Amino acid sequence: MPYEPPTHTVERSLRATTGAKIVAGVDEVGRGAWAGPVTVCAAVTGLRRPPEGLTDSKLITPKRRTALAEELAGWVTAHALGHASHEEIDDMGMTAALRLAAVRALEGLPVRPDAVILDGKHDYLGNPWRVRTVIKGDQSCVAVAAASVIAKVQRDKMMAELGIEHADFGFAANAGYPSPVHKAALAERGPTPYHRLTWAYLDALPQWRHLKKARSWADGNVPEIEGQLGFEF
Image (cartoon, rainbow, N blue to C red; front, side, top):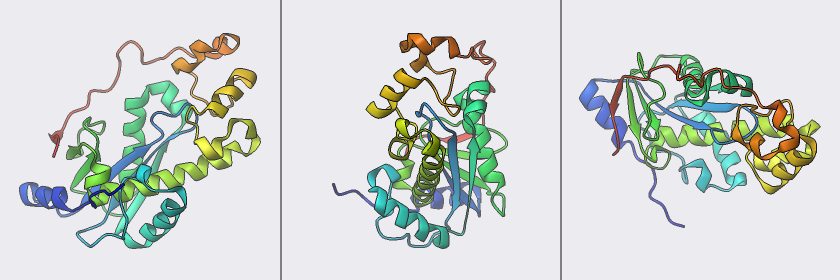
C-alpha cells in the first residue's frame, strides 16, 4: 500500500518557533504486550535525506525492517535506547514506565536535545523536556520513524532471546503480544517470569488468577505530566 514518506516539517517548525538546534524523535514499542519490557528509542537525524523506504516500523516487513535498522544505525546522527522492565511496568504503571524508558533513552544520547518530537497524542515525558506530540509521527516525521524502526527491531530481538527457554509461547514471532499461540501457552502453562502480572489477561485464566499482582499505583498516585508544546499536525 503506498504511503507518503516522512519529512522534517515538524523538526523545522520546532527549530523556527523555539530556537531548538538539536531535536530528537522518540517512539516506543511494547506498550500493548503481555510480556517483556517497553522499549523507547530516541533518535537525532538532523535534516538529511532519510534512507529509502523509511516509515512506521509496523508498515515494513520484518526482513526489510531489520536491514533498515542496520542502515539507520550508521545514518542517524545519534540514537539511544531505554527500557522499562515488566517488573517496573507492574510497579509503577505504563505511563510512568514509558516515561522512565524514554528518559533513559534521552539521557543516553551524547548530547541533550533541545526539543523532543513524541509519537502519539499523549505527552508521557513532561518537564523538564520540551515536547511536541505528533499523531502518527512514526509515519510523518523522519526522526520518529527512525526511532520506531530501531526500537522495534531491538525489542523483537530481546523477546526472541527471552523466548528461547519458553518456546511454547512463540515470543520470537509475537514479541510478547497476545497471539493465539501465546494465549494457548498461557492457559496451559501460566505466565513466564517475563509476564506483566498486574494486567487483566489473568482475569480470564482462573487457574492462574492467583498470580495476579495488585497495582501499587491504582490509588491514582501517577506522576503528573506537564510541559507539552503542541498537539496534532
